[in-house]
Length: 214
Image 1 (cartoon, rainbow, N blue to C red):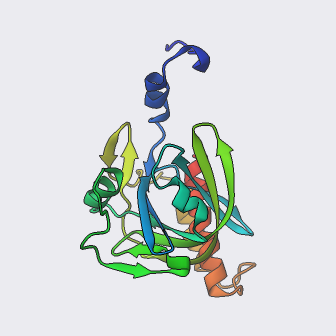
Image 2 (tube, rainbow, N blue to C red):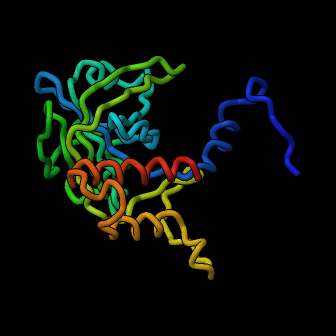
């Protein structure tokens, strides 16, 4: 058995290692203000609410991009696909122009969308909260795209892949994602007549929230 450690008595490296047991996706968050662009790699992204559609991510207060993200009206969350490790490293490094020679699409408020991602969310800045040594940025999702590409995963300081868990033998114990997929195919279920875009957004955010709860 392991020994419980008081967070107040340990070093940040030990705490970081323990937190690293929680596998996450990897995002590149972008924004633009008065012609100046910013982009950072972050794995602190999470869904918050479906109605209204809110998401959050966290930014180190020491980041040189902190002021721009506080000023920009919108930011884009680009969820990286499994083959985009290069983009993750580019926006986490010290490259002077992280956007150089990249194919970009400008979104709401000048936020920047990367190509071939797993999904992207264009968000209006909703609220900025103080979170210790980080800023917590909440955004209201206004436009999103779900490309369905396999995501890039980060676990214990290393890039990883998503692999399906072996399906149980009993149909009644199918993973929640399988049940959700079957429900989406049933036009008789309550809510099936909701506008397609709103329903799709709820499904995308529900998937993220389900992942956070597991």
